[in-house]
Image 1 (spheres, rainbow, N blue to C red):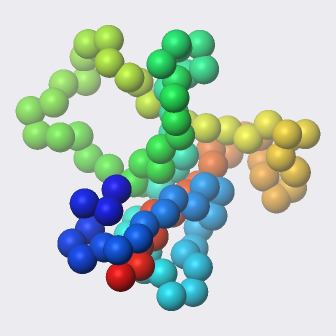
Image 2: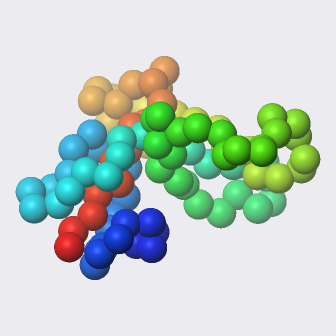
Length: 97
């Protein structure tokens, strides 16, 4: 992901966090998303910007590509509280020069 941030030396996703570590710059806040678990190509979680916009010229039609879905925690797997199984997991993308 570093190629998105000019001069970026290091970047990281912090899943289930809303702030960056000291000395790191917040690039964006978002929600943890992934493809549905029933799909064979369900490979990784992605932090999607909460203010994401559709790419110019894109379509909302289903063209059989990956479909992002919010990730919700499962109490028992994660400690509830602080997690809430009715709330999508937040995330941040941070960079450090």
